Length: 106
Image (tube, rainbow, N blue to C red; front, top):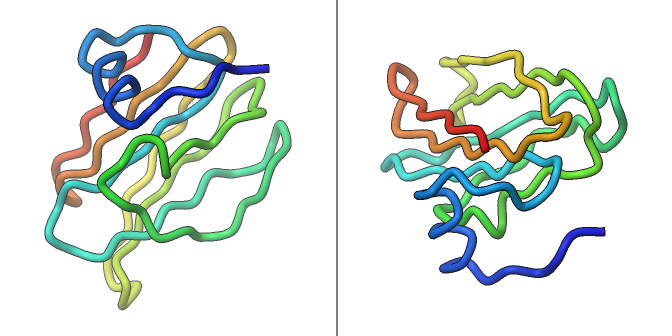
């Protein structure tokens, strides 16, 4: 079971690429409404969710292996995706735009 962290604590851990738990922490810092999908190969829900600018709001946990992480705009006219693992890692993903996605792993 993971500890509960505030938005500021998670942001600080992301800045240092620190391990929290085997999870994705995903946020949107663009000026667009962006939706995110994380596959459910190792459990969870594979619905599309609207992202906020907070890592705390964008936690996808309970994953134990490789997953597809994808983004789309509200009109579903643009998409981009990545194949990543959470096994033994905390992965911080910041969406800046469809040509700029920052991925940091502990």
